Image (cartoon, rainbow, N blue to C red; front, side, top):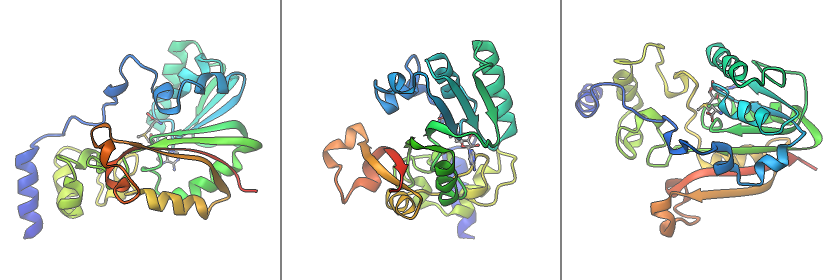
Amino acid sequence: MFTNLQYRILKKISPAAPDCCSGSVYEGKSKLAVLMGDEFFPKIAGKVIIDFGCGEGADAVEMAGGGAKRVIGIDIREHVLQEARQKALRAGVHDTCLFVSSTKETADIVVSVDAFEHFADPAGILRILSSLLQPAGEVLVSFGPTWHHPLGGHLFSVFPWAHLIFSEKALIRWRSTFKTDGATRFSEVAGGLNQMTIVRFEQLVADSPLQFADFELVPIKKLRRLHNRLTREFTTAVVRCRLVKRT
Ligand SMILES: C[S@@+](CC[C@H](N)C(=O)[O-])C[C@H]1O[C@@H](n2cnc3c(N)ncnc32)[C@H](O)[C@@H]1O
């Protein structure tokens, strides 16, 4: 009953699929340079890189064209891997940039961009990232929005924090009017959505074979004056960190 009312409100607010998460904020810029800093491309020069949760491969292709020795993009969705392979072919980097669902190779640097809030088993992924890393290697992670960010529900954030106001049931029912993957939970949407928070991520790393070498929370620009230890879950745009093997 209550779900029905919420569903009807959601349908009224957004009768069709919302236009979100297009990544257009990076248009004309290198997403990797924006997220990882200007030192990123000099750092990967001549290195073997794994891009974990590579999606359609734009970052992996950019790294292969930007000086990396070899790039392996990993994702669980075969159709995005196929799209990524086409991208590498068009960019002429298909000899040095391959896309697979798993690998036994190890890398100097493992990169994971905008994926940690999507992994169904993030603790398991941290163990995999550690196993893919050469002993002196590092994992560079950037992700967000996290779950308590105004738009942390991704597509479910029809307005800021809507994903925290409406029930999962109502949101999933609303989504099923324009998405056909049959998801019945947030965790089942295509690509995954694990409701990751900053405190949970810190705990996952603390319990993993990796440790923080650097950890940075980038505030939402308009809320940066309010950003502090108490408000960080609600005011952080991007979680950025460098992980190394635990000593
Ligand atoms: C939001 S996309 C980000 C893609 C890309 N890194 C980017 O920044 O555009 C997250 C990706 O993580 C992938 N993913 C989810 N779970 C995964 C897993 N267990 N192993 C590998 N990739 C996974 C999804 O399929 C999806 O393509």
